[in-house]
Image (cartoon, rainbow, N blue to C red):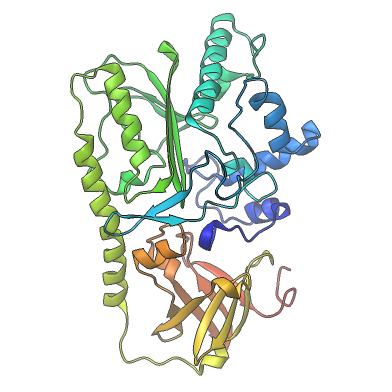
Length: 409
């Protein structure tokens, strides 16, 4: 997802792109969350059901369950009773941004294409809880009148989470599974912004909890299910805060619901996590400034100009000269371009401040590799660049040339 919530790859590139993702570990060596799998699931649905995933969900779930405020089509700007999107500035002021341009016709729909509300999601999870209880009690895979099938399999342990802990922590099929009291921050940005993740529901009776969270540049959400008591908690926000507010709010509601004897101070946790979120940007700038090698010079700027393609051949960076400097445009979108500044040797940066990043509605990435383009040369000529946007060792190589004029295309 790029500036202003736009997706630059078409839906038919899902399989090609997912198949090209580099391996980070051997088969079954470790668990690593990746929502590309849900994008793939959306592709599988169409030939099996004869419908797009959006149409299938609407016919099989949304309409039968009466989820009237749930849609697979992006609502129009300014529509009735539709929340707009915001991101927090460094001073915590919310700034209006575009909501992501996602929907049934877009890539990664299976991961983030549904628009809904708290009421509808409580209906959805309530029916899942009812169906799961019925199927567990009867040893069945379906429940009369319910669209949910094989719910116990969805809830069951599929992969252990990497963090060691005395109590159970697993990933199921689309839901995390944990035994309370326990931490509940898998996939939450709060995990890297708090000194230690809080153990939720301390002092309460042990029971199974299922949960999941997610966010876009303009929203944060969290859901918690308690199968034993048929309870669901859903938190939806329309702001990318400086902390994962939805995670903390959901945890606070859970402790209130259980009347936990040892409740956390979630207001203080939010302050600590938000401060750390702002400091991540400051640390990024300090680190890049400290690591920069002074006294180096680039090649003539025109030698860097050109199109740089990934090895799949479906994504490129257009780098060109403008007003005496280098400018980069993802997928050639020059309306949303970024000025490049020399960092050292053949490395250039497009580093933004937190507030500049908010102004273009871009997801708040603070890894160093995201902001550096390391141009590669052979015999003095620029042949490509490396960009470490995904935290992969050595980064991804982009070949300089026209479309199709490079290996593996």
